[in-house]
Image (tube, rainbow, N blue to C red):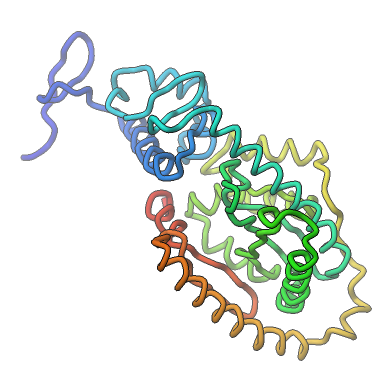
Amino acid sequence: MYGIVSVEIEGSVRNMQGFPVKSDYDAEIHDGLAKLFEVSAYLGFPFTVEEAANYFLPKSNITGMQLSSLLSSETFSDLKFVVKDGYLFATEGQSVASRREREKMSAAKLESAASFAKLLSRLVPFVRTIAVTGSVAYGSADKWDDIDLFVLTERKRLWMSTLLMLIQIRLHKLLRIRPAHLLQFCMSYVHDEEGFSNESRRSRTNALFARELLKAKPVAGMEKYRRILEENQWVSEFYSISYRQKLRLLAGGLNGAAVQKDGTRGVHSLFSDWGEGIAYMFLSRYLRLRAYLANLKLKAEGKNLRSFEPVISSESCVYTSNFYRWLTTLWGDS
């Protein structure tokens, strides 16, 4: 009784209010772009049409050129984006110049992370891969944004590895090896191999998880990261074009620190399971306390979307921010 009533005007289907009626396919793309507008406006960061097509329209299988053509049609005329020179501008304050400044800052942070990962791959024998995620991976980082790290460790060696990595982060800051804004390392997504395998199985319907995995910038253990993508072919169901592009890029040989593969068996006798258990007991309490204090500061500063919850187990340590939860409501399970 309350369905859409449409009429034919000049060869196009329109509802009684005079707006074009979208096909299901166009409606999904329109909905995805509306979500992207909200995020772009909040971040103050303009995305390109190519980025929108490749990473923000799951299952659309559309190219940037095809999306540009759709954006010029009347069906999408109600979107608030200003499309210019291949960019989608959500607010008047956004510009190509400001985006390039953020890209430059992101590149500097990525280079710092690569140098740090090279050191970790030598000093921490249980690390399998290290990648940069978050704003740095997207090229949208401000000066004081964290350098979010995705770290995968050998099974049952996560907390020994975490302890060693936290020590290295603290030493870097104390020694001031680089400017402070290039040492904002945050191990926001750390799993052992079993923990990540369980997480990826649970996330097979999660478009946001698939995008974050694709957008990650590996800086150590490139081969392991490539195998992770190959083992999770379901990611291509959401982003088929960018999935193939990423695998081709990795096959071409990205530079990055190598990690030890089979050379840690002798070390196991020194770092036994009881050591892992002690590290877990100590660090899980320490990290929860540190998260509590950090959240108090963030809330006092009015940065509620940046506050986060530590999700900690024997096989995982993940910081889930309110911003990520918001993104999940936009691009979660599909």
